[in-house]
Length: 436
Image (cartoon, rainbow, N blue to C red):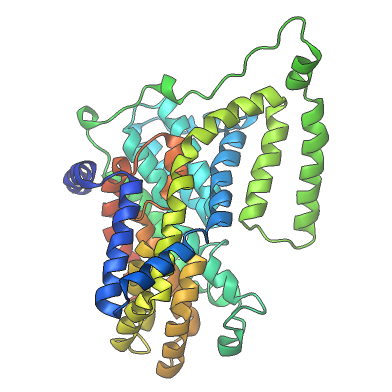
């Protein structure tokens, strides 16, 4: 059934979904029009909001670019390539490959979202080298695992409200992760997602004659030029492991001290980890630079599109449009249903404000007073927003850009499959939030 449903969804997305850059321009115009019609915002004010916010994600944009680059560097190193090849060898059939990439991506994303994006993309490429399976579905399966991230160890909303001094502490206090990430009802959602996502991906597997395959030679990692028999001093430095170990080992020592001192696994630490493991694993500057040259080619989308998303976020926040949308859902909620409607509201807002931390800053001032007034469980309301943010990432290409850059695909190639996940995962997560 899902295989049959995925065909028209895939054809529709391939035909109608434009490049991700066109998508962000259309979203900008939709957000501006909605702010004018719903909030009465003047066009001149909209332009000011948009322009002032345009560069607010520069730091985050660089972090995301480094997720792609450092992750590719590590994954393309000889030891990691061998490890991924062995792991990919566990799959002997097309269906086994789809199930395996789904589970690996889910597990990696539950640990850390940046880690999951990179591992999923690289592992999908490795599987495509070994098994003749639809490459679009393989990458879509890797991306579908990302939906779990906000219910996992790196969920920005539950970690924010568990941190002393957070911006709503005077209102709700500090809520430990035992009430959010490790709460039984949230673990039930995580378990359900771990079961449903791989099964849905397997059920969407096209028939063999319907597959879109990729030439394995196109997925080969770059091979650095061999060392000459009589290297110059410059060539010796480029092909010697000495400098790599002299800088790589201190980096790994810093990471050890960081974790032993109770340091957290945030995005900067993940990038630092990928980079210095990559330095050590590549062994020579020439090998690392060959991987770097290949990695940066996929980063163009991040560089050009993230400023536009920052402009959209500014329109949504400063015009009051995001708050108005949240307030409408609050108006139809009860203490029991507020977590569910928070999930739905967050899913809609996330299409325009695709940032967990930024979205919480927008919705918390609306959802938290409502939870207090209705007597709702604040932890469940916060996690409703968190899961809503993760849910519509299946439709929003913002987060897919690093993975698509590594895989060498366009958003339209995978979004047909992701639409099926959007419906199924939305029903599963929303259903559990409604019941609990």
